[in-house]
Length: 162
Image (cartoon, rainbow, N blue to C red; front, side, top):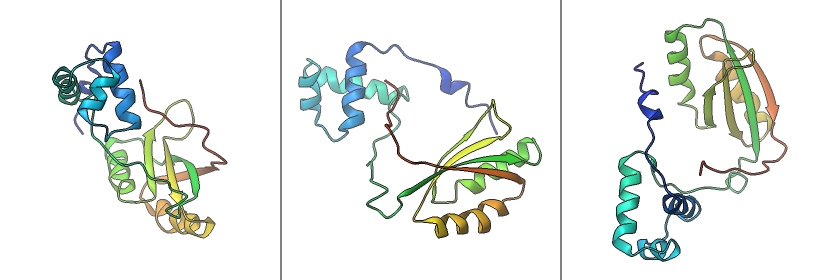
């Protein structure tokens, strides 16, 4: 696994207009360049150039549709802390490849400051779905030694950086 995380830490200069654009795009990614430009007091061409610069620098990594998990039939959010049996690059790479193949997993992070190695968030239909996920898929990944589950009562808020 290459050390690409070092390159990811490079930053570009972001001024207040760039921040305004990012905030607008995070909440309304389908807004036209004309509307964006008007909201940040620019003409369309300089606005489009700023957005292109943010895309080229990797600040804007894509555009996507946000969905309502409840309305799609996945109301139960679960945080699962996972301890691995061995701390080797191969073991972690194998786990990370496998966990990405599970549609229920919506995020996965390596963590520090706790006894567990990973913290994942999953979305499931109900407790039976969670049980199937836990017993027949997650616990069968080679190297998973221990799991600790916490259920989300309510998401208070969610936002991106800016």
